[in-house]
Amino acid sequence: MELKNIIRLAIVCAFLSVITTLLIHSTIFEFRNLDFNEEIQLYKNFKYNFSKWLIIAHCLFVLVTMWAVFLIGLKEKLAW
Image 1: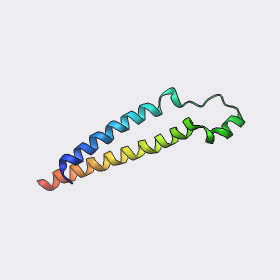
Image 2 (image 1 turned 90 degrees about the vertical axis):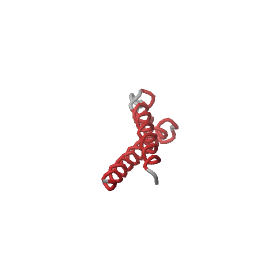
Image 3 (image 1 turned 135 degrees about the horizontal axis):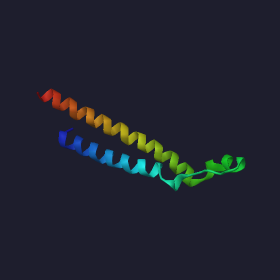
Image 4 (image 1 turned 180 degrees about the vertical axis):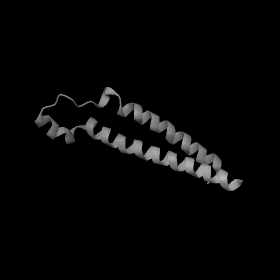
């Protein structure tokens, strides 16, 4: 994989990580003031499930970004 493609991958994943961070911490996915029965039924709620998948996607974007930064640093170190 070329250095140019790795840098592009790192930029895209970092940007997507920022977007997912903003979505995760926004008020869109607040589930407060629920009684016990409503909390039990949360697994049926699309927004609740989507928020959990968004957290997983965010973690993957961060991991890919860090791996790409590591590869960029490794390629730069080996080029010396």
